Image (tube, rainbow, N blue to C red; front, side, top):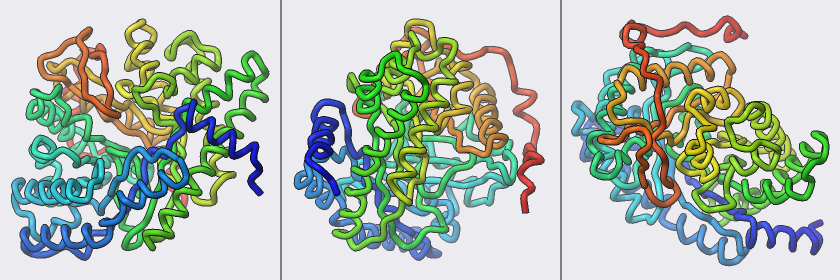
Length: 454
């Protein structure tokens, strides 16, 4: 039973500590929308999305108002479009037409973002996959709500280095086509290794082919709540520290479970997973970096940062798993730079570099996220960064990702303003030594020996 003390505690989390349900995301399968005609495919996509998601935003708002729980975003994830468009799309512009249809439909539905303009090419690329990938820069430049992702590797298959090389070029092109908006196209494009197919968080969300026709996933975030809880046990032992994080994560996840079940019931769509991710926002007091500082670091990047992040990530997952039988996605701690004021402060103080962030990604939930770099960074260097992150994911059997923004016309020391949840970011220094001969090799890096488990 829930007692009055727990109700009051939850109210305090929402009122004072930035607890929110970050997103209700409806996953929609578009496999049955495939056609031999682009126009027919677009028509079917629009009809199905409008039929299934017409009440998504209203339902989220109603639940938020009735329960007093902020629900920040309502989103949609769809089947990777490279699969849906394979029969009809023969040119880049065919795929762009689908992107514009998706964007217009998302706008009409009132959702914040739509994820799934995606391809999964961990082993190789079909002609459709490559066309979709090459269409990404133009698609992102012409749309507002579309998010794109490409999965270039996995523990089971290795790393598709041809796709890695291509993605370095695609990111550069996306930056150029949106240079008038601080290269914001790159902020909606993520390159993944070991991508989960039940992830409600953008930009890497898509509706996996193992999913049903539609599903409701909920992403919960509460770094401010965790920080406030840790303030009460300042100086205590690691055992107390871990127990406090775990108990707090349990409470946060229960809020998400309540919202997910209610949304599922009202929309008459099956409940999928709760993603408990300590995903920060630019708001003061809503920072993963501040949690690390409360644990005992002067700034993220100081010695001990990777150990502290590993502890935090593990306890968040343990608490979440106890609160729901269906915890999935990318649950744990996110460490984006632009979306976390504490991370920005650490970069500006000289405590945090890309190399240290890369080390931290070995133990966090994602990877190098929302990092602005000089616009003149070569495509091969960006591909090298993607390869390094993919290797961490492949070897460690975890999801890793790169969402990096080469800001056209800017250099180290400059700053970009992306607005909203995307925040602002200082342009960070990148290792300038050349890796082009490595990146230019064709083929793929084989799967590691420990992948052979059948």
